[in-house]
Length: 152
Length: 193
Image 1 (tube, rainbow over the protein chains, first blue to last red):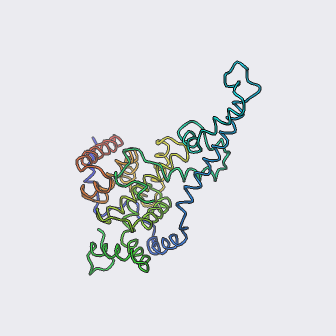
Image 2 (cartoon, rainbow over the protein chains, first blue to last red):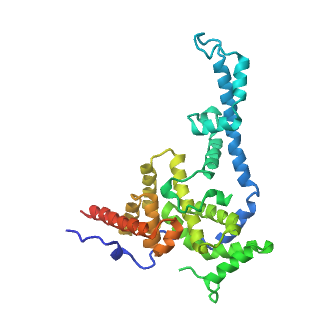
Image 3 (spheres, rainbow over the protein chains, first blue to last red):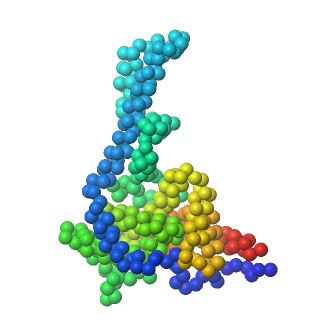
């Protein structure tokens, strides 16, 4: 029968299963400084604005689709919505703020990526922007005081 | 063990110097360079054990230090500098793993399979069968439990320090670590049958 495995007997002092490649740390601090120097001052704000741009675009598409759908002349006249004239529709939509539309899209089932037909690079940028405000699940929250907003 | 860059200076004093100097307009670069040189190896060690691949660890390292740069001025000093830094490093590593799962739309199991493949390909584990098996067994744990295990078993941090880094109670950590050890031992034992 094999010996019972004991992790502490397996442990070797100073053991490092994944050492860095030779020379990696030699110039890391300079590379970091270079990276810092290249960081645009307002990059953080641009990411937020960029993210909002796509949601505004999606919101515009939703408004357009809703306008067409609500006044679709090919719908059966039995629908009470079809009886609503265009002016009324525009009035109804005007009462919905852009932020409410954005919130609806973010929380609802509207898929921004397919609605706005983003390219692969744009999808990646949107994902990056979403992750900037992404709250990790409770079990991953390392410190209740360490909120992403603390770093904004 | 982390030591100050100069052997004649205590680490705590160096940390205070870094924080003070960083707030001075002409001292930011010097302070940041000193901070990076002091903590880079330990930060890398923590990050690399989570993401496995060196190139990924390099990316996460850079993201972590960019966060440090942006926020060091606001560091309140409520915790020790190294726990604050490690908290950023571990959070960035966990975010990276979450992002990887989201990007490829893969369930966690497939991401872990990818990480297991990277373990198999790691040159440092070539010929060290038991360590390779240990690393692959660790991938069976939830990420945060794996993190706690790494901080305790490999980094030899005290529970109090890990508690500051992870925001978990010491009691919770002890339970998590104890269960992790039992689980890993059982997994490794199973492979020997």
